[in-house]
Length: 130
Image (cartoon, rainbow, N blue to C red; front, side):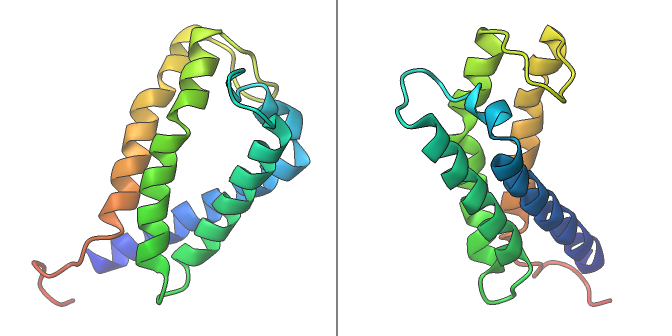
């Protein structure tokens, strides 16, 4: 199980770094989904991108990987309003399929991400050594 966990940790780390970088290279896509009631849309996009890159790298550093995984579990919950805003307002984002059911399918995926990140925080004390 540890081997699988390591693989999933690396996959999540790479995904977070790539998505974080996209916040800097495709800012308009991310600005569109920042809810209107929040100020400083561009700053929020840059800040969240920076945090995603930092957390992705943190997942690969053993001394901080557990903290990075906990941070990501909370982070995915914090970005929930942006996803809800996009779904309710049917906001089209370039580069993503625009179909209302697909937009709403992001919510189970967010729950999966929260679970995935939280799983990475858990000790593997109940498993046999490999």
